[in-house]
Image (tube, rainbow, N blue to C red):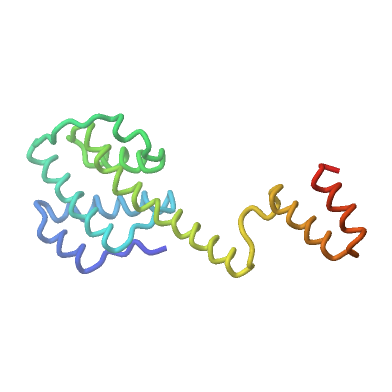
Length: 167
């Protein structure tokens, strides 16, 4: 599992309002993400680092961000909100709304894993030459018709008629 601090993230830390606090909260956040097996891409990590640096600045200068409607974030996962809540509490002196905006970073990174799993499933399906619904009634009826075609023509007519009629 990655979550390495890249050169771009180092530059953000050094340019931040308080580089010590920014580095500390980035390390804290990466540790929290690991507990939930959330792995941001390099680009996502850079954007997150920038956001965390700005959160440190707002906390230290008592600046408040504008309010957001929590209902807009109703589809964000519990994991993303939990990480976000922990980070906001760790920084301290922030508006409650910060957790909702921050949670989007974690939800997006969380989707990376889900997208990878879907991609793996698709590749396996292609390699196996099947589909995800091999046991569906549609596939069972196709298998019955295939078996039906393998029999002699006269017995096939009787068997196929009974199959089509539900028997």
